[in-house]
Amino acid sequence: MFAENSYKKPRKSRPDPFVLQKRAERILNTNPRQAYRLICQADRLEPRSKPIKRIKLQCLIKLNRADHALTLADKLVEISGRAIDYMHLAEVFHMRGELELAKNAAKQSLMLNENPTICALIARIYYTNGWYDTAEDFIRHAIELDTGKRFEDKNQIMLAHIKRKQHQYSQAIKILEAMRPGAQKWASVNLCKAFCFFEMKKYQTALAILLKLERSISRHQIDSTYDHRIRIYTGLIFIYERLYESGRIIEPYIKGIAQRAAQWLKNQTQSTLGEYQRHDFKNALHIIEELNIN
Image (cartoon, rainbow, N blue to C red; front, top):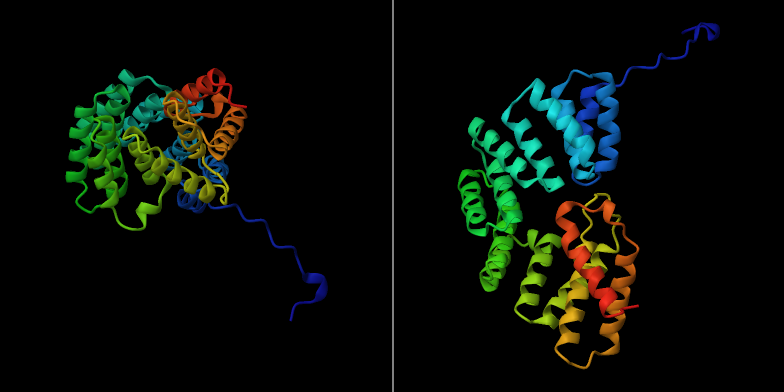
């Protein structure tokens, strides 16, 4: 038995940077802010680790910190130059709206390592450019390469979005409804479906989906920069505009929904939005002002 006066306080142990890295990886998609705090700590402890820096870059992308992300992405291309580094650089350029630079970086990644992830990213870049047929070719190639079906859900959603932009709304809905039951509950799936019904002029169906999503999402904390409520509330404003322009009598409850959506959107700042969210956001604010939705 130790004598009472022989007791010493335990030494503070140095955190393991690679344990911090694993913890950050596990929560990257669900809580990128906390993941970023963990990976920054790991980076300070192990500043030469390229895998740690890559996780840090993914956090910056998730948090829409485009300038910091570009600096780090450039650095990783310079010191490593692997396919994954060019892919991350392409993703940063895409986030910044620099689509030609994104395309060039993505093609460099593709030359180094053809894989489903980079093909899906190239599909997104062409989609953003409005080249929907080329985007479809790349996303179908990504689906072919994904033999383990690791990215099946994301790729099918992307394919449905492309079909929607090609005005093949029924085909888009068919793709979404063929997905596994768990995925059909996702906000991204139902948002795509709602906008398909909107374009098909089935406004009540689109409205019902968006309101259900609003109730569901309001119960959860939004930990990522991408907030599905942007799409939900812009969608509600677009439905109100279509009903208004059609000359129909707008029921008070629909006007109340539009007012709630307008109030939420007016409280947002554009600086917090990703490049891909800004277009609908600007259009919705224009409609709110034009139709005086207060």
